[in-house]
Length: 256
Image (cartoon, rainbow, N blue to C red; front, side, top):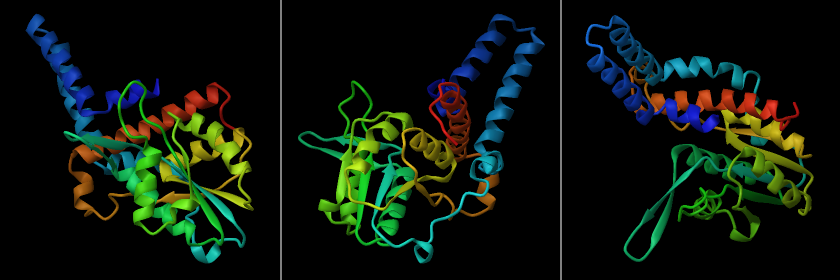
């Protein structure tokens, strides 16, 4: 269900719906319903592409979600779990290169910041690759980025088999228990944090949230009201989170 919702709110989903409406108009040239459907599709996607719209819709997901502050970090050791959002694998003639997307880049930056707030600390880089595709797991790509940010490689533990948040919680839980830590900190984007915390709690892991900054937060406010592909992707992410919460709750995968 979540994959279908994510596809609907994408450029591909918009193109498919527009083509369907145009085909309807060609088949029924006198149909006012077909013309209205095409107009409705364009208006809905125009609104969904303006970043201000999904920002408003996302407020319940981030309500009262505290930001992590190094000055308020409790003493002791910690395992920082950074959840993968996605990455790209660029294939050359003889080598390949993993590149983080914007959300994963923001999470890696936050994980490096949180790491320096504890002594000692470990980072668990979590996230696999899609099935049947020769891609580098997100966990590996994020690990490389963390090392470039100055995190010692020996302090990074990889979990590179998970395909979703539920699997991340189940696979990371035993890794956390194997480390000599006092607490667990989860790093992910703010709109994803509630589902992540509830999924990990259902897997027996109590964690402190450390929401990553919105990677597009530095853009001008005027741009938030203009339809862009970034705005449509944000709408897709917000709708995906609501659909994910419903699906996970229905399957008993959450504990709030």
